[in-house]
Image (cartoon, rainbow, N blue to C red; front, side, top):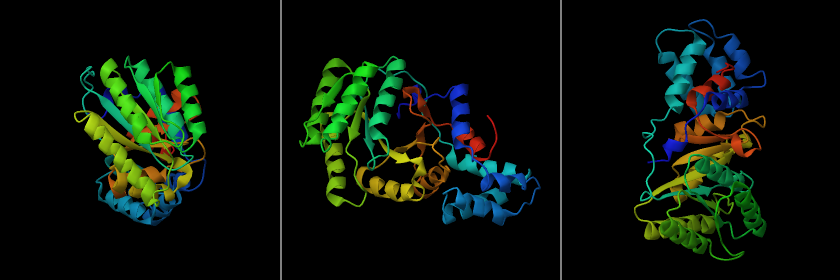
Length: 305
């Protein structure tokens, strides 16, 4: 189970995703305005997808899939191909039980938005009548612990803190012990930012997973990679490296509202099979939204929800 029961999108949230994903003009939007015929200029649409950060291979694959769709305009056929790619079959919305411990491990590079995303996830879990606990496992940066402590206090959520310069696995150990004793879940772990090319730091993530497996062998564990939507194709490289080291289950796409072109989500999904689970569309705690494929695709294509 991947915490689907507190990841339902409202119509207002879907509208926010569409607005954030919408192109500011040019590129794919202009190409789509000229794609109302059943056989549009597919080469132009492919170039537009590449310009949206989808990458050459992904763009070519999407255009190939769109051309195989029977009936409809070029825009409609491309929309079908995009939805087929981005949709994910989620588990049922069965309520959680106290015996079902859940752990979310947030990973990613520096500056992607892991700490604020952790607090936003905790706020959403609390709003769904769960009892989350935050874990400050970024022991490399003392300011990160301070930041998460302040955010936890703002949301009224308990926190387990690592010691600056200490072993982050110790903080995870304390949090899991506390969560088990008090029936807290999900356990949301904020880890230190690291480049996917740094072998030692990536090995540390593997150690964290071992600690979780040892202390909570029956827990539902979800590793979420936090990617800045403005990272472009660097986001795909990050996803590939973290997936090898930590076994990523899904993606949190932050800063979608900051002029991002959205194509990295298409690339990560098609090349690595990783679904987008959450999208960040603003600074507020309520601006981390459950990903909705239709809202995202319609926004990318310049359509309102």
